[in-house]
Image 1 (tube, one colour):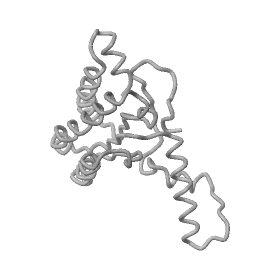
Image 2 (spheres, one colour):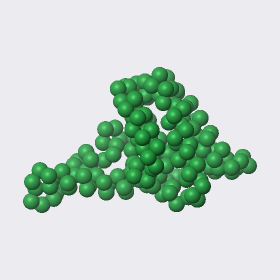
Image 3 (cartoon, one colour):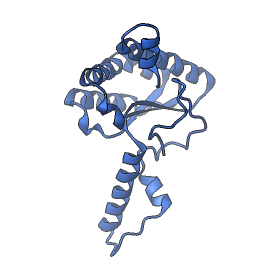
Image 4 (cartoon, helix red, strand yellow):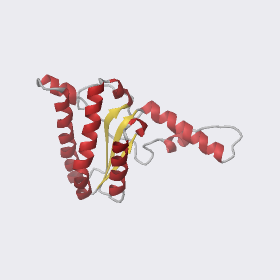
Length: 182
């Protein structure tokens, strides 16, 4: 999800109007993916860099995330969508963390479409947490020294359960990956 705020400003509307429209676009995208047999969809909804935005915008985005989870969970279940949220959840408030956990639990047996929502996610964060996790696994197994391979790090990435992406679309028109899935 990219360019929602810029789209709203170009329409003479507040940025939040664009973010709300972005939720509507996700609903349409999920429906289309289901109809076309897409098995995996990953949405980058909030990068670790987004915490630098104005506090009122961040607060609005968090409230929108809560609202979207509350409003859309039954539709996800109906469509056979499994939801996973990847990223550093420690910055989210308790209500949002609870809703994420509950939404993941309620959809964990769905198999039609695997929806991964990257929230407070960054590729650099993911590499760091994967390396730390892989190193800890080696230490717990009794290793004298740590020697990490690319495959060991890959197996500890937050997205290790999903295949590498076939297609990356930036809906806002930017031509950079913005610390996403490095």
